[in-house]
Length: 221
Length: 111
Image (cartoon, rainbow over all chains, first blue to last red; front, side, top):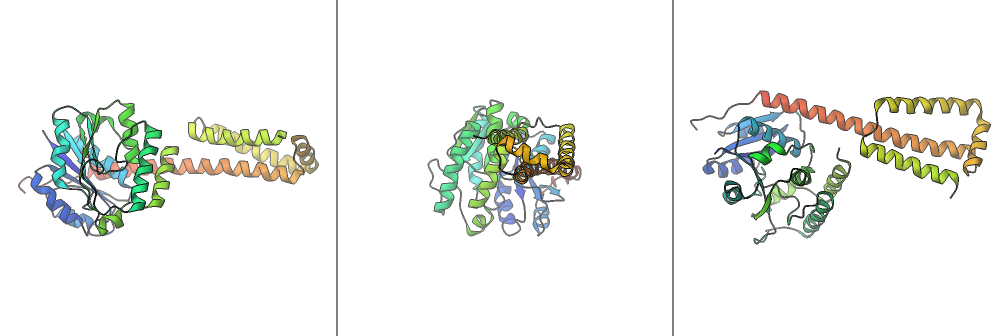
């Protein structure tokens, strides 16, 4: 069974090497999408035994993930995992995300930072955004997850081939839910641990960008 | 409600729905712009008609009527341009993705 980890990276040179080093021992295939970075991201990723794909222009995280998914489809992957390049995700969470897929109990598994484990370093405004995002997702997609926008998720082959991202930016997280419902995929949530370092917070989504995400969702374009 | 209020709200809703539902067609856009130009020329040639029309619709002056119509027209055109830009972005995404996947470097199997 071939498993690939898809890592979209846009200007991630400060943290990328550490993330890749932590993922190599897992022995999965790694696909890094350099989303038109202007820094050393391409060079750093190129030093690792990963499949490196470069967008000549910055297209956004959703577009980068779709490119990675397309590469995984070409490589005939059985499972794929989305993993953030900023070091907020924990590599040891991946194995348990895959369990329901390997047992064929779900087509897609979402990581959630609000099941069991308490997230570290999460500030108040971020909490409010995530709570609101959760209900907005529910209103639009009919699926209520405990964690609205968690970048750590796992797909089986069926989900990989039936979900295509058209939202180039950050609204793809809601787009997945929409597709899951439309294609009646089986989904599950698993607790994962997110660590908020100053770096990942800096790279993360602010309050204002959630307005952008909502707008993209409502207008679907 | 005056006649224009009904008309104005209906027009705004039409713009919004036509944008959301994507039943807009390029030919309709051109007809719309053509109609806009023809109306403009007509009003320039017969400015007193705007006053009569405004009174009929329940608006004070002809100039106000023109102003309201201009806002509706601009709103429509802005949405039109926005959806065009989005379409262009989608195409750009497809091109960049296709090109990026063509130049795949396969990972080193020995590593």
